[in-house]
Amino acid sequence: MLTIENLQAGYGKVHVLHGISIEVPKGKVVTLIGSNGAGKTTTMRAVSGMIKPLAGTIKLNGKDIHGLESNQIAKLGLAHSPEGRRVFSTMTVTDNLILGAFPRLTGSRPKGDVKGDVERAMELFPRLRERRNQLAGTLSGGEQQMLAMARAVMLNPDVILLDEPSMGLAPILVEEVFRIILRLKSEGVTMLLVEQFAAAALNVADYAYVLENGAISVHGESQRLKNDPAVRAAYLGTGSHH
Ligand SMILES: Nc1ncnc2c1ncn2[C@@H]1O[C@H](COP(=O)(O)OP(=O)(O)O)[C@@H](O)[C@H]1O
Ligand SMILES: [Mg+2]
Image (cartoon, rainbow, N blue to C red; front, side, top):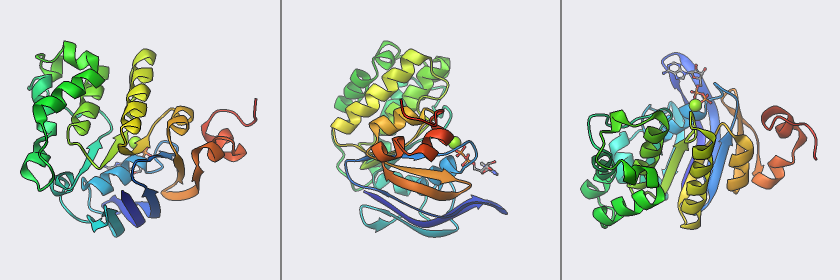
């Protein structure tokens, strides 16, 4: 599980997160909701070590990971599927997936069966199976997005950070992404999810936090937030029940 306490982070002199606390319990899906620029991506970057937090504590399974390098954090079992398509474009789909497992091969976590997990990833993402030998750079944007998500799953992580996995996808692929999130959830994968489709995120999540200008304004059970008039008005495009 992941525990974030009083996290502060930013870029140079730009202070973005002003001390946020988030708990992602084992086996649960927690969603972080907020407008563009609220600091959702910054939160994920600070947790996974892409940027150095300014203050606060971040614990993965009780171990303090604040300030560690991102590869060390991955080895400890935290995967980050970042915003935007981050794939190795000159490598094949299969090789991208195998690389996703690399931190577990070099770390102290169970090595597992990488070949078997590549098969499992392709079962989860059938489109990737069809394109397994294709260079990742020649995939469509949506397919690259799915490959980034599949690569995160290849770590067999204890916690997975999903930053806008459905961004830029055609509606049918958006549905597929949410199906995959539900499937991972049913397998007990712990997730922190950021999604442009807040209503859909609240439907798959157990718990939700609302981030406003780098601070948590509201948090609670997803179902409760879904029915909160202020949350509905600000993030769900509707102010009333129907
Ligand atoms: N690399 C960066 N350098 C400077 N400022 C940044 C950088 N990335 C994001 N920001 C700023 O940090 C704030 C939060 O951005 P971000 O975390 O990406 O928000 P969100 O993911 O919620 O849309 C914004 O004001 C954004 O302009
Ligand atoms: Mg973002």
